[in-house]
Amino acid sequence: MGNVQTITLPDIRPYRFFLNRIHTHKTWSFPRHRHHDVFEFYFVFEGILKQVFDSEEILMEPGDFLAIGEEEYHSLNGRVFGFYNLILPVEDWKEFLKLPEIGQAFSALRGSGRFHTNVPSGKRARIRNLLDELFLYQKKPYGDLLLQKFLITLIADLSEPKEPHPEASLPPWLQTVIELSMTRLSEGITPLEMAELCQRSPEHLARSFRKYMGTTPSSWLNEQKLKQACLLLEHSNTPVLDIALSLGYGNLNYFYRLFKERFGLPPGEFRRKQSILSNFN
Image (cartoon, rainbow, N blue to C red; front, side, top):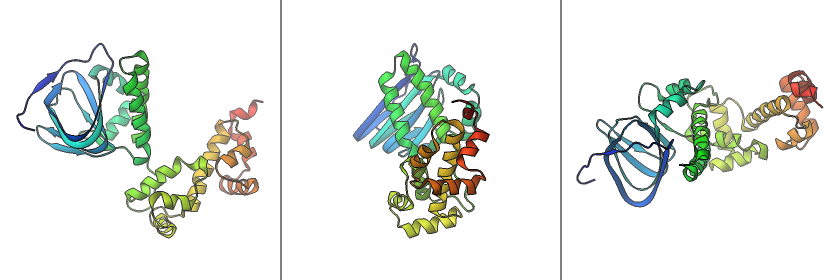
């Protein structure tokens, strides 16, 4: 980076936050600096970004989120990368952490060290879209509402429990296809389409599901669809037929049979017993 320059960036008040976006295909660097009374996040969406602190170096890859506390000195450098840098007053960040469950969730994510994590690949597009929107509305009242939306979505996405499995951690490709499949249940995704998503053969996908999940892709999909059906039956007034069709069940009798086998009641009776909405016409 050449000669090291130390700078102190100004406070960001009267605004609630700044959001910087850097996207370059050439060598880029920012000198050693610190912020006063602010908290900041970095999110890399392309390439590799190096963060250099006094006692460590961190290479950030696509999907990486990194938090930097007030008064920390650091510099940045890299080439062919893109990132967002969110800066907000530290007192606002502390107030946000007072929200029910948020502070506890962030502490759990951070652990005993620096908050540096990777957003699951199936959720990166949503985070990127929220940041794009936040970028456009900064320095406006609506932007302050979007900031709360973004931070809560980020913490929720990162805190979401992983799909339980009986053996060692899932291979990254399998975790990715599971996350993507969950977002496509309403499209009636099939095991063959799951295999295409991860560019594996159907046989390889089936073997991996048996090894790591203790089930088959078809059985796993049915279980997720039936759980989704439960939510819709209990918390919406969507007709049973529409629920079945929305989850890819073209045969209503087949859906009824699977649902009753899994939950002991037909869908209509399950709704009558479980949903307060069944009392409204």
